[in-house]
Length: 461
Figure 1: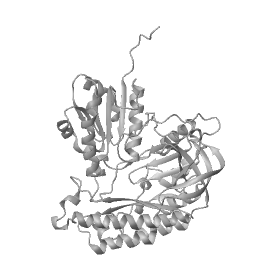
Figure 2: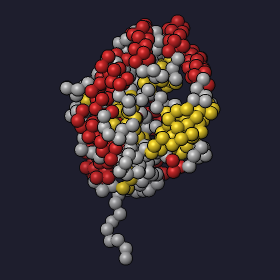
Figure 3: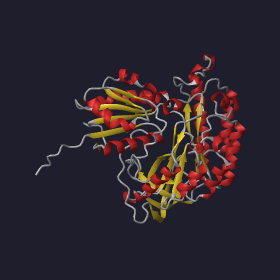
Figure 4: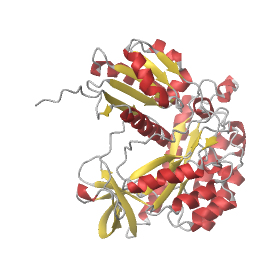
């Protein structure tokens, strides 16, 4: 006998950008599931298609505009298409003019209203919802998580820094932190769901303060949750590593031995033009304090090439600081001017020619990756603990991650996803390792916990 009830409306969310966008998509799915929607893993014929966007660089926005055009072919006559996230916040109603098949433009603080906005869109209405809500942390929303083995936990939204190249204060608003008790409750639920690794998220996460507790308190409280084996966080600011925070990192066993420490430039003059609020010497001092407290600490970073006015000497300062720190890896970017940021108002003659930027970028990549390869070659033969995360892209190996954030490809059955393994590092491409299991340390699900759910897809993050 057939079920007389109508099928629930389906929703597909395509996610671009940073981990915060992934966490936001998980909360959007959670909101919509609570209102009767059914998530699907492809846009074909979905009742609702949402594109959760990034605005940090121009090419990210260009890519989204192109993708919105491509998504037309998946639409039914009554499909509702919406754009959410930072690009939506930045462009607002302009997106509705650029893409006539888009009905909704919703910024990061407007996701609670999605069910009502979608109801209106089905009636032919078009909306732009981009007001900031400084009290919104989606505390009552149960996230539907993509990852089968880790949980992204936003602890802070917005940013009070005003780096001259950065659009984030415009798209995410001023800094505000969740209450420590609310974060701990979410982490406890994560454990009940069978996960043992959490990643605490914030634009300058180590400046977290809920009015009573600072980031050191948060690390200790999260690390004390029974069943949590790994605590990570991203992205900190070099100015906000207090002695209390570094002590918590060193003393809490579950806090992993990896810090992503954005540098942006190795030149004090450049850092001043970027309004980073630290000098080259300050950055090196921060590195030294972290490494002194946490033996074996891995460091990764962000670096911008071709910021307005960058001279040959300033670029050489960046290379020399990279050599001094010897990063394990880096996200390296060519400067991308963002509308509304102070960098776009700098003198036109400060613009660095494209060919110069390209040459510098190639040198930077060769320098950073060369040192990373040397460091990885020295690790061959080591035995390290990894958490198996997913099937690798080639389908033949599993992708795992060490505590110090090394990617290790392991030959094992997919049934071992979610397990902690002890592996011997047997080879490296320079960027990733291959390893052979030597011992199963433990499974990711704590005693009594349920197994991880199958992850929903995340597109192009």
